[in-house]
Length: 281
Image (cartoon, rainbow, N blue to C red; front, top):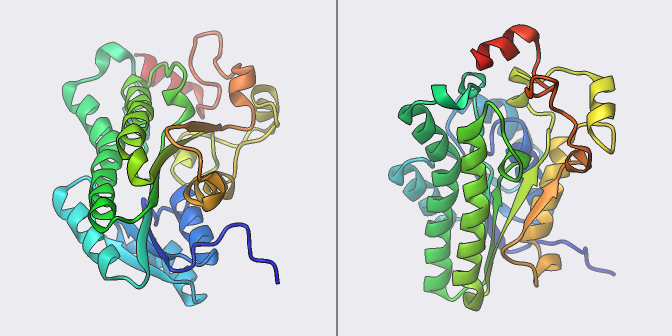
């Protein structure tokens, strides 16, 4: 009988940002379905109850861990669970991150606190979790794979969202350096850069507009979380065994057209004129 092309049997993989019902949840489900024991890290019990508990009820090997991976204590708690889990520690999907609607604003309005918060939420969670996993893999002489999540905003301009875009760009830079340092240890580091994706988080400021999506995106639609999860699973898998230090843009061709900025250079994906006016004030 032919073996599946992607299998994580016997491997333990950590997913941060696992319980939000978007890319992290889709990644958790996909990896567990492919045989991994998944350490699903997140901060909110209610989100675990809504999105992770049903997956566990299906019999998937998912170990929920309530922890804030933006803190040293949170990273340590996740690593403790990963090292105690069945299987061999192998991988990490850094999905934790994002940005609330109030983080959109003109560059000159961004405070140090705003800047630092978005770097802590996006770059620091990726780096310090990656550091912890790499340290354990090297100590055991184990191969492994680490995947970050950047954004199309980290590969292009991010008008009225400069701190988020810059933090996501920094993930790309960190990926390349980590990949170089860890290559001879047989630990690969790559990143996925999603385009606009239908998630609970993005729903806070992006509405449904089929005509806009068809005009802005070559494939004519926004991504589903599973489509981002598929790219993450590929980069964690042995199918990508000779790929490291890369950032894969998963955007349905949005970057090919890059027509989503209106006449005032604000994103056409933003929900309404009041919000657009507020971030430009």
